Amino acid sequence: MKKGLTLISYVACAFVFIFAFSINVFAACPLGPDVTRDLHGALNIIRIVAPLLVIGLSTVDAIKALTKGDGGADMKNVAQRFGKRCIYAVLLFFLPLLVDQVMQMADVWDANGTCDLEHPTSNMPETE
Image 1 (cartoon, helix red, strand yellow):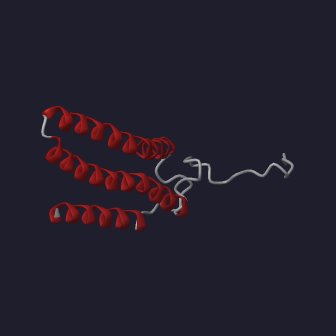
Image 2 (cartoon, rainbow, N blue to C red):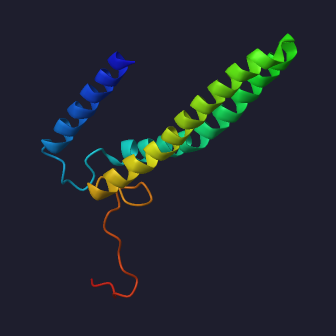
Image 3 (cartoon, rainbow, N blue to C red):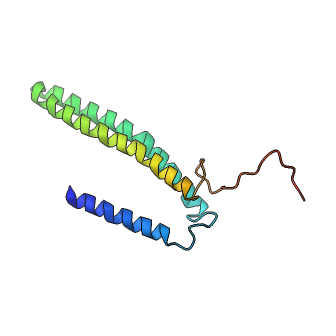
């Protein structure tokens, strides 16, 4: 477990340094419109799939435990795995929201996940 956390911390530090010292950080769309749209879509998919996986996998585990015969001992393991999965699902649900907020603060994308950071006002007349 400690090895995994170390790897995650190294990747996070590398991402921060690359992003902080990049020349194109303050460009209009530093990741490009296609990558930005795809990344925003993937984050939204993670928010939907994580709770569905918890429900599906926990249901399968519970059915397996009930069909084995010794339900008491197996159901205790199922309950422990369900608790861990719920914690992971909550983390996977809020991680995309955190990434979305960071990307909005860094002006990588707007609230809709696009590179259109300047919104034209409808009250202003167009000048030609």
